[in-house]
Length: 389
Ligand SMILES: [Mg+2]
Image 1 (cartoon, rainbow, N blue to C red):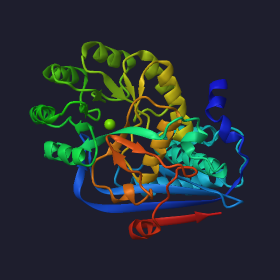
Image 2: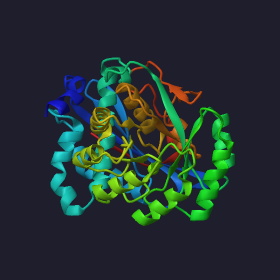
Image 3: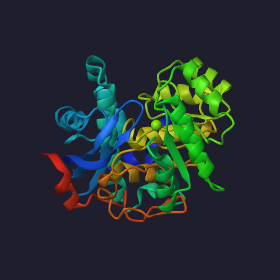
Image 4: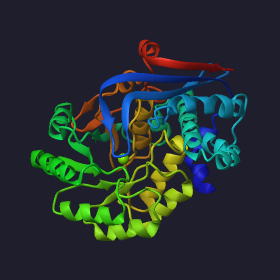
């Protein structure tokens, strides 16, 4: 309990009651679909929440909604019908994440909707942290206790089509770490990895992400083929929910360190994974589970276990900047994921968008997240808006 209190010490000392929640669902068309081993994104969706207290202080949060295609509207409906009635007018004693998780626990079991409910709660939790830090006129990272606003990032989501060209484009934009999607055809995966490795310059690194594509035997077979290559980590080579002993067996076998975390949906699951020793890199997603409260806890547990904290993120701009603020706020020692795919909702939803240079992003020193959505972009891509008070 004490550890949890430490997680939101600054936060619960801010006394506020929210009286208004706005929900925005946005969809931006893209020319090139985003490919993963489990599915394709044909447009870029986002669900934003904006909370406001009686004094007019406000905060923004983002809810993960990349899959399935219809997921954004559904999560907005969960916030409107399930969470907003609980939040409005309520004085939180614990963190938003904790209280809403407790309130919805039975519903989550009954419906089996652990993920969408956790994602909706995550967005609200982040919005409340933004509100709390704006009220103190402090940048969120400093509100959390962070010492530096310079955050190392890597280019992520690199499709299996023409990866060398994509890596070069990312390099030109200021990246020096890259993550390639694998888990498709084994021969072309290996060809892609080798082709990218051949282009790496000194100080550049390459990671690969299988998105849970293989079973243990297939994963071992793939890793055997690439064991000599300089790969910084391999992400989710097997299903995230495979038993810990399977992950440990793979970690013992693999000369390449393992990474996971974007598909863990419970504090105890994170703790088990961290304590198992199978992972070298831990990757919670601020918009998928826990919001800032839960992911801050994971960061602290990772640090205790000497794992690298590498927040996962592949959605819109508010959640991306929240991930940067979280990383800076916990004085993280890993890298933050930065989507390399086209997404008009990344820059447009987080203005002024922080600049990438030399593989790092410098946060500004404005209060809270330090960014806000561009209203014209919101109008252009808006498909649903709810204003609840
Ligand atoms: Mg991944």
